Length: 439
Image 1 (cartoon, one colour):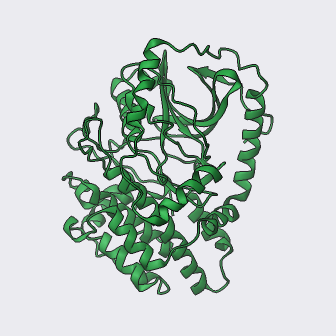
Image 2 (cartoon, rainbow, N blue to C red; image 1 turned 180 degrees about the vertical axis):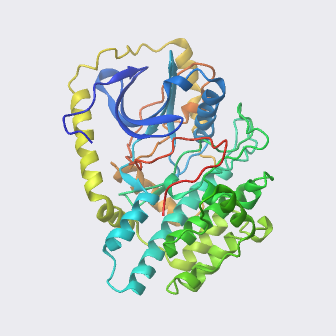
Image 3 (cartoon, rainbow, N blue to C red; image 1 turned 120 degrees about the horizontal axis):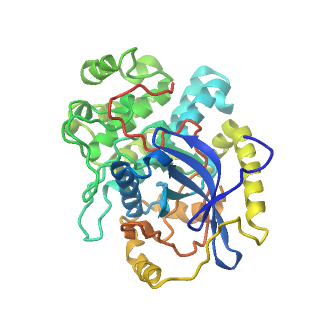
């Protein structure tokens, strides 16, 4: 990043949009600042639809669907959405900043650095399996919350992420993994629907039912989680090839070896969990993400969050320090008492007041923390995570967005912070399947 200071902010609604973090085919991701009344400000992350797409009804509907789905999911292991702004030629999705890195970035760094693990290959493999097992178990807890999410009518939304991959798991320095990017999720009541013959998701993590355009349900995400685990513990790609058609054929037909055949140090119990999740028959997989998370925790043993956080800091120290310096510059610019040119006034309109009145109902948790372990972690996460690229639903206000209303959420009592992999796919809809980068 350029150390000459943050780029001049463009103010959209009540948000100042700063430096680019990542870019995808449909949107860019930026640092941002919420410019509140009485000098209140807050660091956020802003997903910004490319200008040429802002007027596209289909793509705009996808972004708003992502916001509405995310607004109904309240869980410590999910990157949530704070706000949506639709103004003039801009469509913005506002998320909470989380200081950390994607699992994809961490795995690449771990392979290159050894991650600070013990020195023998066997000890490194065992240690990596425990760390990755804990990270994916936490992400599965977040997926379970998404799968269980209820709509405003108290009916199940039937959310399926459909793009669960290492790029979409953010791991904070607080030791908490979080699922991000519901941009291609399937849910009831969406205004945008996938057309016949279109596939959404990254090719290497597609389930057999996605490849054949069959019915998808929560177990589809468990296949993807199992591919993530298989690749993470072996350091190899499960499905790969020079041509998309060949990769898709492998997903459907290639015999899947146990990870222990590639890396004998993988614990037997962990290998059994992975192979069950890789059943091509959905009925052979775990019934829920919570069931798989529980089996995974039993297979690898629980690690304290501080150990996972220390792993993140070891592997990503340089990137995190540079990002922190950029954020310091941005915060200094917006804490001078004079908002950037074009900052809005904050008179509360009757319309905004009515929307905010309904926030309390939208903010109620959609699913209780499933285990005592996670109930104990949530307060520590909320207060201790002054840093990982996440998005906290500050009152779940986004689900109230209709048409072109930008909802103003209540002030949150704590701020978490997050980092995004520079190759982040910004909710890219895959119309024609293409290969992705990775291991």
